[in-house]
Amino acid sequence: MRVPGWSPAALLLAACLWRLPPGRGAAGTEEVIVGEAGRSVVLMCRNVSERADEVDWFHGDPGAVPPLFSSNATLPEDARLSLVDNSSLHISALRLQDGGNYTCKEVLNETVREHRVQLLVASGPSSVTVSISPAATLPNGTVYVDKRDAVMFSCTSNSHPEPTMGWTFQLPSSAPETFTEVNGSSTVYTLQNLSWRFQGNYSCTARNPLSGRSQTSTKELLVYYPPPSVPRCWAQTAQVGLMLQLFCNWPGGYPHPVLQWTEEGRDLENSSWVVNATGTGDTHVETLSSSRLFHGKKFKCVGTHILKQEKAEPTCTVQIKAPSLATEPLKTCFVGGTVSLTCQVMESNPPARISWLRNVSQPEVEIQSGGRYLVTQEGSVSNLTIQNCSHDADEGYYVCKAENPVGLKEAYVSLTVKKPVNIVGVVGAVVVLLLLGVLVISGIILYYNPLLCLNGSIFRNQDSNDVFMLVDSDGEEEEEEEREEEEATGNSNVHRVTALVNGNSAQAGYGYPFTESDSNELHSELPTEEVEGEERPTTQRPILPFLAEMDGTVGGS
Image 1 (cartoon, rainbow, N blue to C red):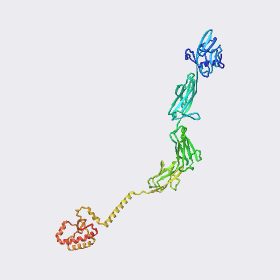
Image 2 (image 1 turned 90 degrees about the horizontal axis):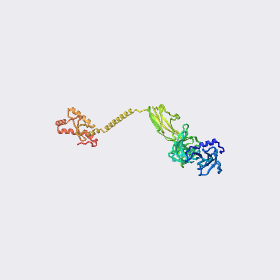
Image 3 (image 1 turned 120 degrees about the vertical axis):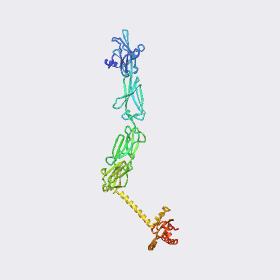
């Protein structure tokens, strides 16, 4: 009996493909055949001779079960069963319940031969399913997860018997790497603290141990993470033209966020005063015309990320401001010296460009570094240094100009160039004037109050024997007459005057000092009464006018 559509060569090939070496089945089994559910298999009856009268197949041991199929008997029809070459059993559309031990029995001239075959039916693997959670799926089917989550990978499969299941991970442009393998119809594992290096293809492969057939399911996984902070905004002036550029930057996330500039709740990108809008990676830039800008205007940048589904979207705000300046309005420089003019921008957003100009005679000539001029800027402070100051070339007004797309501010600095002063000559002149002043004042004081010299005697020793001659102007003429009379008469006696000044006794006589011995000699030459008579009027005549002028500061005994 032949199977329709099967050639002998095809049947032989099928038998070879599913034939296993003898001795692997149950006791008494001579051959083991593996078939797959839904397919066909041929069980060979190998001990049958060509002259066999009858061949019977049993699904079990003969005598224990009725014949399954016989070459001579009429059995219940089963379209799946047929004989090949009047001996081999062909089973199509295999089922799991078709597996088991089969016996082929040959009857020849009352001689019985048997051949035992074990049929193993394999099913699957099928319906291999890979699940990754928690995760979300992009429109193209790619799965992405949050790196901060603990991600669970699971794989299931239908197979008989239970399959061997393994996971492989493959980076782009690299070979797959197996990292786990188990026996069973499902497998589960968890990964924590994922990084971008875990992005790639995750494949689960189920392999049937009987048939060797395998099936694989693959998921492409992306690891996403949001930016760690909030967006950062700033404004600056465009390099070409006086236009405003708004920058919004939100780094640190994957994939790149979506950034949008708004003004009073309206999207700027579709506004008529937007000259250009560019976005590269984590930064979005809007270039605006300065025609509609004014001091204090605010712009807001709104950031969104695929993992940031919060109610309050992260934002940042920029407020533009016109520049304001602070300078030293008056500066002085000596001829040949060095001076620095300072200009500081107190407020400006975006940062203003600072330049130095000359006065109205040269309004558009910007001062550049070179020669005697040096222009430096550190932060918001600009300095103009002028070396070797010249009165004709440098004196005048200087203009500090600060400009940004919002406005323009100018401040004026007046520079005066002076000739250097001779400090040594000035100091010498001052000292000379001071000395002259002291001498003049001293002379005036002595002229109007000559007794200051007498009062200075209080600082002398009380026992001092200094002698002063005090003569008033009225007594000088009388004394001159007496001197002439004495010279005429040859009188060598000297009149004596005794005055009390500050309680001290002093003797003087016309400028001739005399000692105590001289006094004794005079007293010895003249009688006592005559001496007293001569001394008393002489003493009172010169001293009394001075006593009246001293207002009691000097008294007689």
